[in-house]
Picture (cartoon, rainbow, N blue to C red):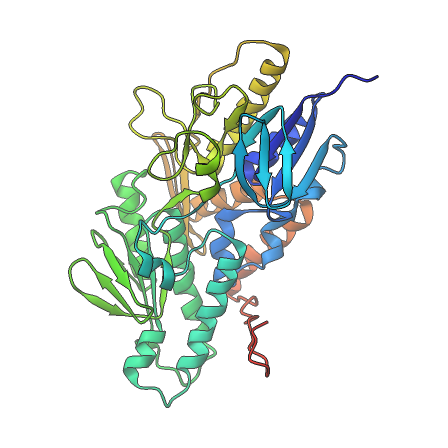
Length: 424
């Protein structure tokens, strides 16, 4: 009778989960990868779907396609709901999955910091559905505002687009929205574009705080040159769907608030039997094991990794997840063989953000770059991380076509209301 292989269950098919499954897929173990979606989403480019630069199939890749040559990797499409560590089973909406080792790589979701009205009336951008919702809504606002019977006040409300959050997602979204407005100018012949505005709101005095001040100033300068109104040290307290209220008492009439101000772990993580922080991230030790557990690990956005001397836990970015996946894979094999586990040491790869067509900023330690060559570097790094040769070719061609022509042919409204009153 053949020896039973250790069964590793991985929750989440993001950057960390896929990297981990591919790495362990070369070992003598059985792997079950669990995710509620059958695709890996390239979240850093969601903003380009939301602003009609790319289509959804260009930033999503079927999970099973990764593992054609990995017969020991099985994909199970289900929603994880909890972990019973005593019985060593993962609980899902389609039944229980027993494990020998479990890895939580479930990612994160939007953090509205307890503001229910803001959550109810704003647009998050962590999923493909949310990005498509933003695209449909923004394009709808232009079409509705083009109706001349509306008052100027109502048109301005429809044509005011607010992005909250001065991190990479907020910066990139605001810049891309401003460029989308320029494209619309050429095709809406009777719309008064003096009524259109794009605003970026950041609660702190700085955008992209991981960058040096000169690069932060460059980001703000480029955004303002594109027509984006940048409001720093400005806090949001309420949004009723028609008016955005600031802590200062100022009210911004708008129907479009895109929230990029923070993330938190997916709620499922709190049901996994470990201690979580205020953002719902589960605490792990130096070996990436969930504190107090011998067989449960956590990596990426859903994990809180903070060693003594660190001011804050590692950021919720892709390099943290992929580097953690490699160490986690080795530690699982160490555990299988009864060997000592190794410590996780993160190597910072720097920060980069694009501010629109042909403009970006890059910083890695003392090395800094801005402008067109920074944009080329940003483009190259993101192409390397995309999955599939077809996707790399089509996305690269679209980026260069957009750079020289400014066209965005993805401006298709897909949530059309049919005669039966239902939306498709």
